[in-house]
Length: 360
Ligand code: 5AD
Ligand code: FES
Image (cartoon, rainbow, N blue to C red; front, side):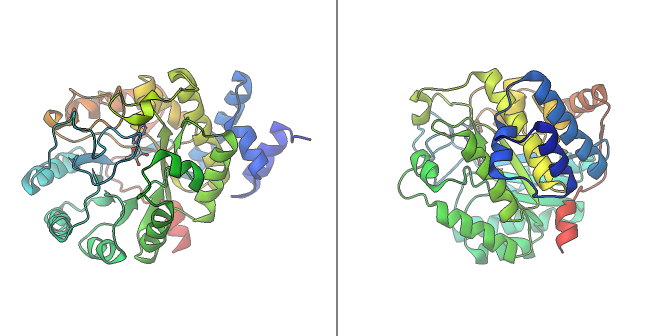
């Protein structure tokens, strides 16, 4: 017998991690508009109790699109020859960090393709030391590295790290990546980040070819089992220059957006006090996709602060938004968009994960 929606919500609100895989599968696969409304309202209410009617910002600097990986879904995969590669200089990165600080976001994410080399490790250390005076909460999103590298970057000033597991199913992971990409190493990296004392973020894509609703429910259980502090996830969106784009797609863009919102609501209801991002992929599917993400329980947004000149070359999926806007335009846009849903930008606050504070 399936539990009633009311029963599931009552249990979810009692305490974190109080739902079964069956419950989560039910929440993730909701299609009835009224049921979706009820679940998202409960998740949003929980977000407001935990984080207030405030959204924390992390400006993203896309530091380079050179990548050693060849993920079958990703637009900057190594084998995509249809792309001009770039790497920002330290001066560029520090200039963009200043833009981020001036915008009042108080947090920054340095994201880029995966490069494992001593030269790159030193480069990132220099960036981190160069921006220390800005007093930003610094997140890195630079893929799999050795524990030693994670430790050095932490010592140089990074305090958070995002490494999406992409899917908690090793079998599905194997279908989405070449044979030399290892799910197990990714899990080990998450453990290493935790040992180094980072606020650890992970996440998955939804609407992947071959992914079931139960896979997604198990993804949410994975987040809880790893006790992560931050979640960044969004729907998979095909990129034309990738092998996965030729696979049959089960959902259209409207369906992808709804599934992404179901995932946010279910994750908030399961984990309670973690930071959850309303990611740019949602905005690629609908102009107000991120606001819908906030209203489904997310509390973080990641506006792009990369110079517009580089934005086109960092397209992980089709339809990336804000290609021509600069950081200042996005700042005004976000302020208006949040005001329209009764939320405010959490200016000047780093917005550390409350879950991290509670566990340390
Ligand atoms: N659609 C949606 N998200 C994608 N990512 C990579 N390619 C795609 C795509 N085609 C996500 C991955 C990665 C993050 C930086 O972007 O989850 O971890
Ligand atoms: Fe970039 Fe709206 S956030 S234009």
